[in-house]
Length: 178
Image (cartoon, rainbow, N blue to C red):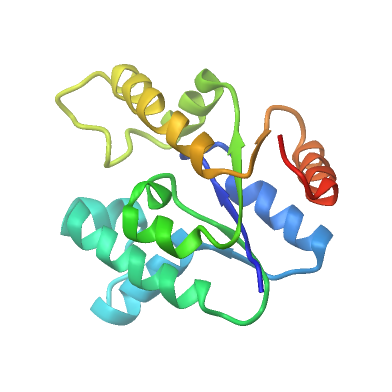
């Protein structure tokens, strides 16, 4: 059983592409961040977003919860489309969980991604001591090569969602990746 796992920077469009891709492939779609929020509510009795969990409980707590939830999802029998949060595939214990599956990076032009991120305000993982654009550029430079290394292939999400889905399906049908 092989899941399709979407990775990439925050706001690159993993969930939007994932929902449409799952529909196209007739598979369930799961957004890891949503499942983390549900697990947090069940565990702590509070409804917090991932951003709030990280802010109030710290990154270490968040990453442990993220790994626990990812492990539960990845061991499911049913092949699905799973969108990971931007930091999830950068953690070594998470990479071990996903490496046996089809990993697709969803990307978009850097400044488009930055604008999408900032539309919701400064994320909790952007230090307040740094200008948001500088933080973003530094993180983009650090993360983008790691995503490319992990992914079987990369799809640019800079047109319509359906164009990105069509590109994924075309690549999946090729069976060999450049």
